[in-house]
Length: 189
Image (tube, rainbow, N blue to C red; front, top):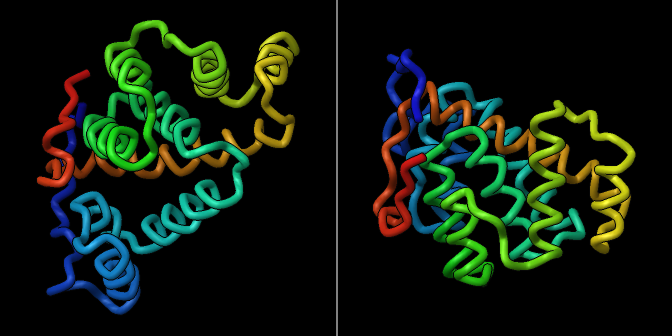
């Protein structure tokens, strides 16, 4: 999904980046071996990319969620936002790096029930947080906690929502082209 509007500003690349964007893109290139098209688009406003990278790192390192759980959260949000770019990128990460079970990944991508009770409860609570704009009911939180999660992780889902809102919305207005690294996991909502 993309916005009717498409940004006209040129992406910030390693070749043309300004002083604020360049170190962010160089860091990504060093860490990943390439600069994702999403980063080049977000770098049109370097504060967006900087905030995204910082929040993403904090979530990955400090959320208390396992790598598969993190991908379930990111995929759930990206699917709800209709972001094909992030669905493809996180599907690749889920498959190749985070080791999300194939049947769980396929269920999320297809919008079908998740065949793992804990991960299904996590996806459901993430959906509730998304759709309620961060105002879950008592029973929603109780179900999340009963699935074995901690209360502090409610706020970690808020962080994930913020990070994915930055990337999903930036991709919508940038009409971000999928990188070759994610092409095998392309998704149509």
